Image 1 (spheres, rainbow, N blue to C red):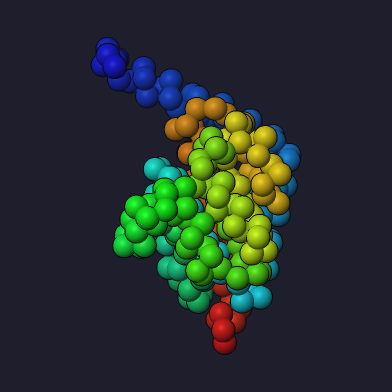
Image 2 (image 1 turned 90 degrees about the horizontal axis):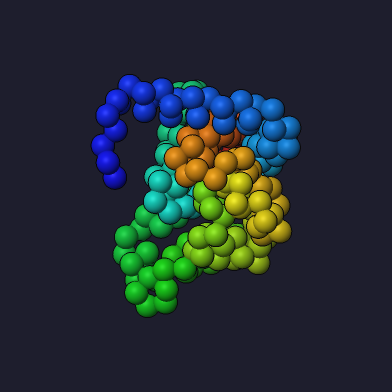
Length: 204
């Protein structure tokens, strides 16, 4: 890739693209409504003693750990209890054993088989909506009666039947989708924290 001759122009162009997409999202009534629904239903599941599982690949894997960290640690409310959130795929021994002995498409699904139970929640992040290990996780989550939230981009809309809630950012450009995913994720964490942060501990 040829280095840009004017970095200031490139930055301005990227900021303009991000701003334009944010404006689209701000007026996407379905996306806004489904994001609020995901927050409310996730919070209710946690209040009932459930656990939130989060998965994704690459940048979305980083997002999974980011969001689980926000819920286990304090996000905005430093006085609330830690909330049960697990980023799948970060047990190195388990992930590499599953990838080696079965296939990489099973790394999230097998952890869900081991750990998840009815009433839990899965947030599945995939900018394309077509990552095999993410779709397998959604399949297992359905079998085990988890609430399934797919957080994706425009190309993931045709996978709506794999999740009960689909948050589809209206873009096909991976970096811009991930930027909006972070904003939506922060909203989800804030809402879940405010609703479920004072509830009973799991198993209490």
